[in-house]
Length: 275
View 1 (cartoon, helix red, strand yellow):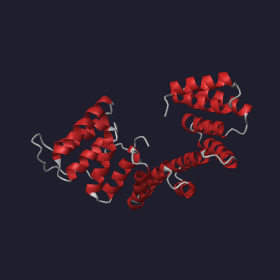
View 2 (cartoon, one colour; view 1 turned 30 degrees about the horizontal axis):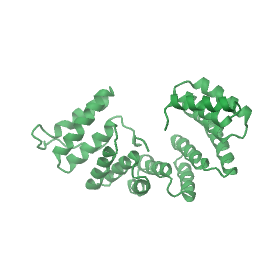
View 3 (cartoon, rainbow, N blue to C red; view 1 turned 180 degrees about the vertical axis):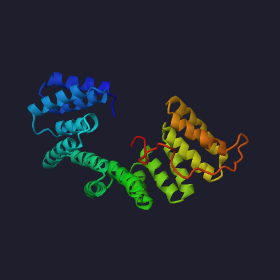
View 4 (cartoon, rainbow, N blue to C red; view 1 turned 90 degrees about the horizontal axis):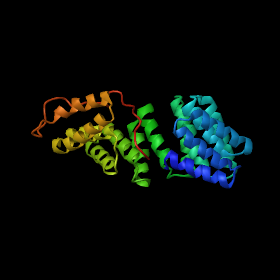
């Protein structure tokens, strides 16, 4: 994805060529919102809808502003459903992305079955939709507590999108919960090999290696993750690393301290990382 500054430059250039380009205005609004300029984004998207009341992109952009900026979930769902209907009527591929957006809100509201139904409908038309597969895996793992079903969706996610850091990480979490230690360790390692810079991913990769008795490799992960946690100034996460690092002593021998059974304190169950 482009950085907000690049997206703003591109949007402004498109509007120089056509000042009534509602789609460009919608993308410009999203870019300004990405920079924290909520009111400016809302003004731009309202102008876009005055120019084109049938702009799916503008309704979607306004939905995002309401969702993340104004915390108006009802208003966000309303706008996203309008965007979805318009995209569907125009046979636009955008409709699948909007459906995933709606499912995300329903998940956040605790309407897990509604979110699942929406995501399953996406997979009926696009079985390889990585976002839908990841989100289904996250719902079943985090919200419903069914790591087996989560693992099924996440395995498909990494099959269709082998470069997805998020899918490999969450697959590892599901495999860990299913006590599939070797597979979990491989999934966490793959997330790191793909370039993850998320210190929590390193925590779990290190923990998985400790569970397998591989202190040498565990320390490689934990020391890098610890440095990342320090750089991120996350005191709780730093503490989590300091709790687990002593499990492998300086001589790379295992200690007698029990391995933590659950996530680092304060960690949301849903995976972090780019799709």
